[in-house]
Image (cartoon, rainbow, N blue to C red; front, top):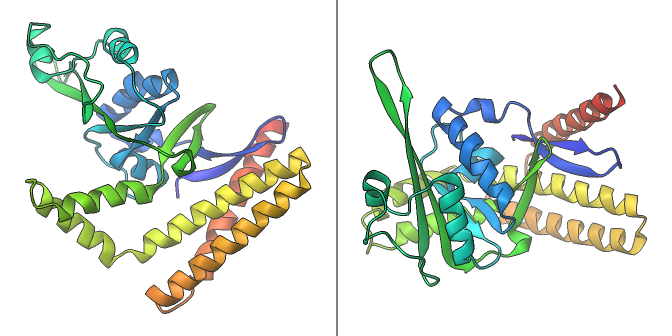
Length: 281
């Protein structure tokens, strides 16, 4: 897991990424995150990080080179926001525009589009004579408005990053794997078959993550002093724990490995204690 507990000066608990999370990416991806992804997420609260990058940040996939950046929406995307992104960050909305500049063929905003594409390319010196091209590509998906209950918010320092629940990303991958009308069906079939063959690790991680989320909610509700809300929250957590136990017994014919949660709890507790100690200093 790439997530630990954090405590604000007001004793409000939140989840945060480990301090070295961005350093694990390659140089090109770090530059893309710093110059574009994080500022874009900060500019628009309706943007939610989806796709492979969200899985890597949460710790469900190994961190390696990231390709396209996928963005989902909590609210409808407007033409004004589309123009602002283009102008503020110097983004193109087609490859021809990126290479040749604006022309009569430059795409116009379509509110009914399946997705909106954004591109940016720049050169990075390799030595005195050579340079490589770095390409940033971001897709903002317009298929459906995401549900707030499917959003996981994790802080990078003091900056909140909104990520989609991993199950949503995997469900889209399975949709592509089962749709033979597209040329990528077999690629996604291989990826999802490998995922399902080793799926227990996913369920262990997702349960550990939601135990951390539940603890954050319970702590913050206790700070508020709302006893009725605490009782409802604990009942919800107990019910979800029972669902998870039943699932593991039926699918894996065993209960979940308690040792995994002991390790996760110890790591999370250590992160919270370190945060409090740093604030005291």
